[in-house]
Length: 160
Image (cartoon, rainbow, N blue to C red; front, side, top):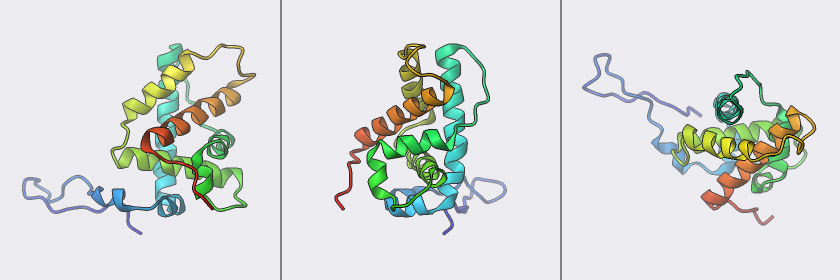
């Protein structure tokens, strides 16, 4: 499946416009979670928004690569889990969260700035002693973000 396709546009000298993403809103969750392109794109978004939020909340520049285990925890503790098949490992659950966040951005449901603000607000209100390490903080932060996005988008556990 091709996710992004060039569209002819007369005003552009090269004849191409920005990529057409209007069809993204028509996809079902199962399609989003099973398309590796969303996970690849979402991986970049996830790492960027987390590092930007750390900078905003703690005035600390970092280059943290968000761990799959953190994203897997967020998946397990959110309504997303019921949309993903059983017997998935941490990497696959993490990919599902990345795909979801990539979709949320591409479908214009939440902007990058909105997601950074949600993470920043959460990080600013966490006590330094709540988590034992950076990985636990990362997990708690993404659990908060994914549940917040699901709540605002009306995503609930799927009845099996």
